[in-house]
Image (cartoon, rainbow, N blue to C red; front, top):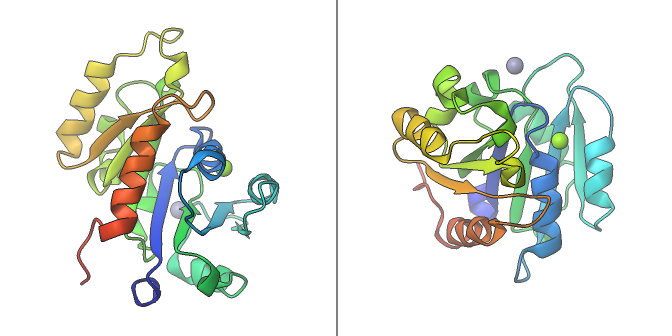
Length: 199
Ligand code: MG
Ligand code: ZN
């Protein structure tokens, strides 16, 4: 359905607190061009993240999963009933914060973006290889905190390469804006031609 409507859909996955919502907020504020963006966000409870997105004038649907620790296509389909698909060409789906089971659920996305923060430790890709294995892009967020936590760029990249040889890696800070330009270029490439061929 997304392909038929020409909507680029990205599934954003990370552990809680890595900065998924902050990345979306910064993207909405600074992405050049005139992309028409919609957002679906999943959490167990609260409308907090959808409210943050709506504060920027963008249509956001909150899925409250209750006890479920991931989104599935069924939940997304219901959320779409509240979204005017004719008015968007780029859809961010912010998954429930969890590096485990979201990897097992196809939400109809064109690309998977996995986000880790420098504060999480360099070995996360090795400990949670499944979610990284299917990532098209790995974003290392909070790069502004790199020095404070003795972050090793070389170690993280080597670990990502081990479990996800094909994934691109972008280091950025959604807070300060450092590195966001590389993410914007990746977004435009994905939206322009699609990173995955139709089935
Ligand atoms: Mg969030
Ligand atoms: Zn789950």
